[in-house]
Image (cartoon, rainbow, N blue to C red; front, side):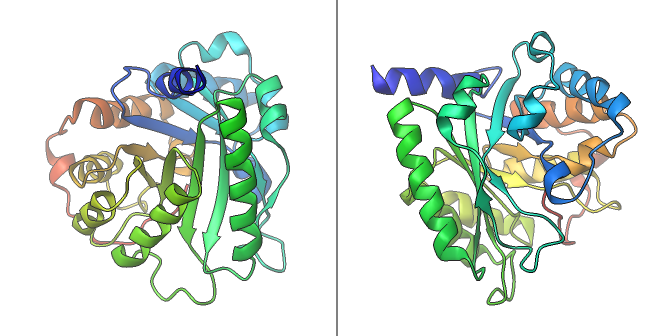
Length: 270
């Protein structure tokens, strides 16, 4: 019964139920500041859902500003970690919510952020373990937002390092892991091949790299999907962009020149 309940929630995280995922994180208002002006928030959610996102990721207070009817088949992920760009250590993350609270808010899953290589790695790993235990008790899927970030990290896109990062997430109980894209992107295949849980490519490409080509390349490298936030909410046509990304994730569609766009630059995390 326990496994069945979690499986049902995991199934909801993929609208076509194909084990592929397009998540749109909108939790940036805690770390960096407002995502969009207040009068545009409802429209952004509507556009993201209508475009075909499988789930949105928000903090607990922001859930109250979402009309449940708007979500429809789009799942809700409540993010439990927080930290701001103004902190003495911007790589530090602390828990600001728990699994029970997320369930009361109607969450389908929760997420926790961990920066491997940060000065507070020990605490963040402990927090991930605590949340994983609670998720197991409540049959709630756990998404680990796991990155290589900190003063001891020379290359956050190193595929060997990222393979270690995603396996830490798996070993500590995550069901899905989001991490940075390896560079070159073809090396992301090494990361996904060594991970026993689905890997989502984090972040939107930099401005001069086509997002649909980025998505197609990520899927070819064995990713189970994408988690793209900033690139979506800063786009003048977020519904159209999400629709294209959803197609790339769920259909493996190649959009002509988009899929063949050379991608060699660094990507930014969502």
